[in-house]
Image (tube, rainbow, N blue to C red; front, side):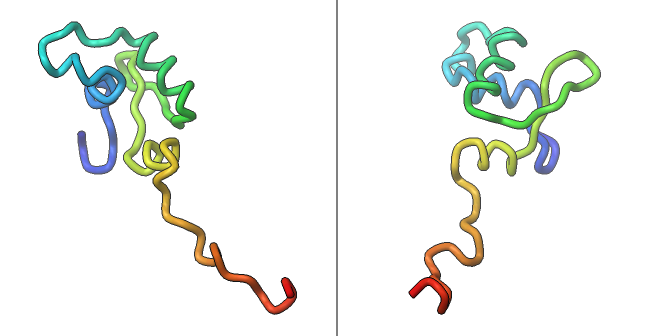
Length: 78
């Protein structure tokens, strides 16, 4: 990871955590299919792998910050 950027190797480990224990790392197609499945916004790096950001991953997982007005009703809601 470089700052907030998740490199392809980071996404491989997130896609298949068992790969960190010596199992074979997932292929590019597998990582890209996983990213599409969870709704992760990504782009391609110079080597054909995908890269994304921590913020995009959090959003795909539903871990984003709530909106400033979440849970607050305005006067016109009554």
